Length: 510
Image 1 (cartoon, helix red, strand yellow):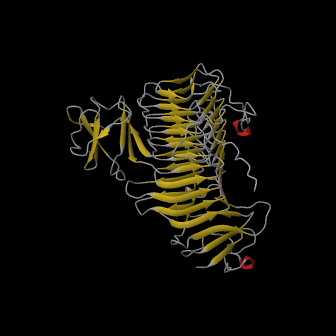
Image 2: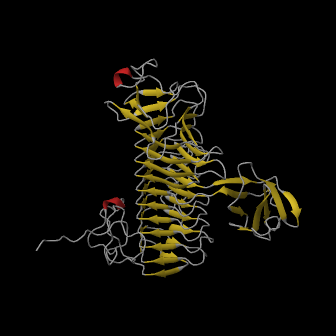
Image 3: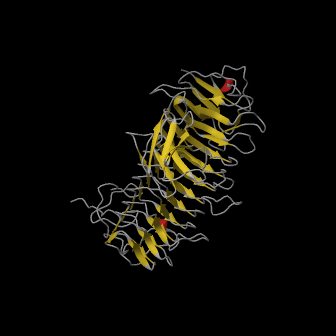
């Protein structure tokens, strides 16, 4: 375990690297050991040049390998990039790497052939876990690539115990940050803006999803209306299937090769489905690795973008996409999205709590076919501002069952509804303040709705706060979860509606 210094401007590969005065120049030819500390002089540009990438060295629990900075400069970071035309798709390769910390590095993909900055991935060679990424910047990815990808490449191994803290993502082709499957991956205090301009479907500033495949051919008739299709070598199981009028087919574990109508099964490397017809020619989506128990906490999304060549595609501020479940957004601010403020598509039991979602061109939140999702203590201000505006601040599909909407403010002049449940079953809207709409709630069970002006200090910016006499004060319902507001302050009883609790009363010592 040793500390090594790198100075791309003044160092030399022939130096021992053990002091700033004898710094090495390039990381690429150097072979670090487990739990070493690798420090790069602030303001320098570290080029990963001729090899495919530089692989991160595993640390051990309690003694992670460390990549950070030293010295003084006008900027607090060192830049990591690749020369134009250099081979390889990755700058730093964290594939199945464990127990490491990366701090204060700027991964700049501009002008490179690389499409991965810091590649955090579980592969058939092992898990990726025990990872801390702090105060890093990720920018200028091209095409349909994210600024930072954290994901899973097979059904067996996984990404877990990853914290991405106080990082920034901007000007990336698709997503700023993509979390693809895994568990226990948390982005906290991060900021993303202007991502999605060149992605095939635009992008999101922050996206969480499962690993899924969409296919329209390759199905072989087994019998009746049962069809099968070979799974990829990395796809040993399937969690969910969606096709046509079946937004979520039921998994048949007992007789997987003979599913009944509306069911699917997995056996012998084959996926069997029974959609009461021939699935060839139609879109079948199947999830081979679900993402769950991940979170966005106190993050800020600004101006998520559509692909300018194909507008009206994606561009959501934050997304729980394609069956991401049992996850959370807490204390986040989502502003000026070209798509939705937040998209929940197919996942179950997600929580959106104490967030501010304002001035999106589409809905504040769209709830897809998932069940049991909750939106609590959030504020929605003047969303649906664009050409693809919808009829409500919060909208759910007919299969978004058991949705719960509580203690939220919806200030939405000119919209038809605050909440639109369609015909989904078991949905509840309780103690929300809905102002400016024709009707507060469509569908579901509605109680305790307040329809007065919430009295924002700034009618275009919910972050400015509410006046003390706001009707949102003391009009909420107590929740067993989510007792803290977006500042981490406890809600007092009786509970306020909205994302910020009223000030605590002053106490004078006797």
